[in-house]
View 1 (cartoon, helix red, strand yellow):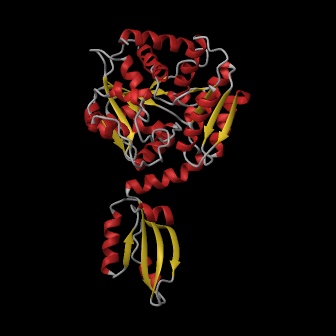
View 2: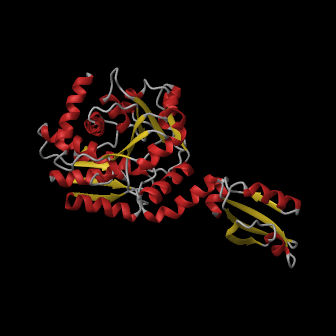
View 3: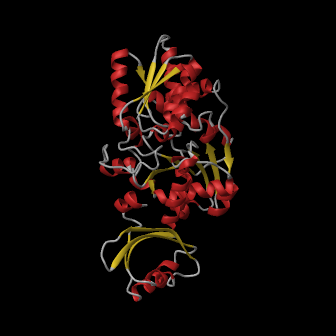
Length: 417
């Protein structure tokens, strides 16, 4: 397929999409522009009807099958997130029957949102404890029933649909030169679509961003092949993909691996809180990726014009305490310790005297009387400045306090924190 043919297909997809919703805004963000000394625009995909760009690909996939004469087609998908909601919305729009396979462990809030978007057009089937089991069930259902399975990213029609983001950006800039586009990457459908749309000698610089705990694109570009990661951190659920899509990687294979930024999950939480508190913008973790990448790109972007694709805003506020916790730990403002204190009157009072004026106990729990002479305590401490911790630890050492810092110990964190 030539670049021109691809652009023509994207234009048709974009025209059809206007029956569902208007182009999402491209907004200059003064807060970020001032902070980084650049002209920064946000492409607000969190403002689609389903609060993510995923509706574009699902809609385009179905549209092309209907246009090909598959008028009695039924569809299915496997997803516990944005793809399911976009799929459901498209099914209702076309008046088609669809079935969504989700893990049994999917939060009720996501199940209900998918049901609201799809209405009577969809059925939801909860299968398995993990996504792989739901995916296998969806594939088997498609095989037996003849339903068309709508993939989340690894299909030409999905990539074409996601590329409509690029067409809207081009039109909304109205000829203004752009230096860089920053996009999040999960399976790669969005990134491969937009880069293909802009391909050519005048294409902007592209930078991609993945969560540190799920670097599927960076690993593939480094190795020169698709690699299924043995383990991923699922916190950034909208982009935590163990293996980049085959078609997306084919289209992204010409980019160097150092064009992929890896964002630490704790830093992403900082960015989410900043955008919520300063700008009033609610972002899911994957939706904050492109904005968070600015922290890694700040030396490259001063004086330049950038577009950041804000991919989604489906955030469950029940996760907010976890987001705050991760942000504090990443900033070094909160640490957890296991202390062994002598079992004598005044031992706890002596320890409390070591705390500084800005140190606050956020967690205090006796774990077990581990010996006749000593007891163990789980202790969480917050402080206003990360530089306060070295002096506190020095005072603890000088006082002979026996302790273990478990802040970065994932096993302890999962069990105790």
